[in-house]
Image 1 (tube, one colour):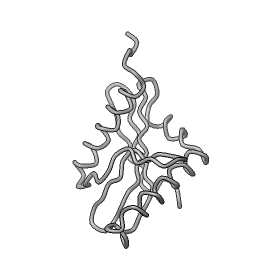
Image 2 (cartoon, rainbow, N blue to C red):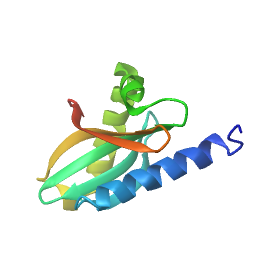
Image 3 (cartoon, one colour):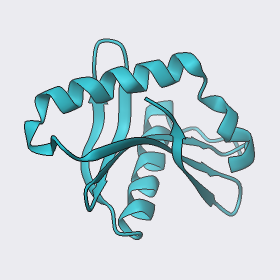
Image 4 (cartoon, one colour):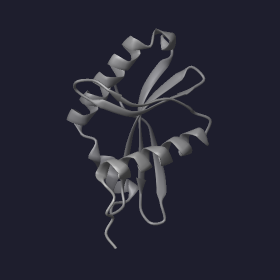
Length: 121
């Protein structure tokens, strides 16, 4: 049966599943859907002195191995731009190490793949 939920509803559900996954591994979710004029970060997670700017990709028809290739250079630039803006507005987070992660959700049953430090600043 085809999925009739809107793209935004599917995206929100994927982001919530990714947040649950990260929380279960000791991360705090600091922010969601951080937007700049040029881009967006789905989740900002923190653990110890580390911040992870997390892109979430979830599709029902593709598995996590396929989703890994969905974040090209242009998307990476947009995520970095949104992360810079977020940090400029949150001086309380200054001094923490930062990285860019990707959480891939796919398959039936649902599989999660967390790519830590998936791309560089």
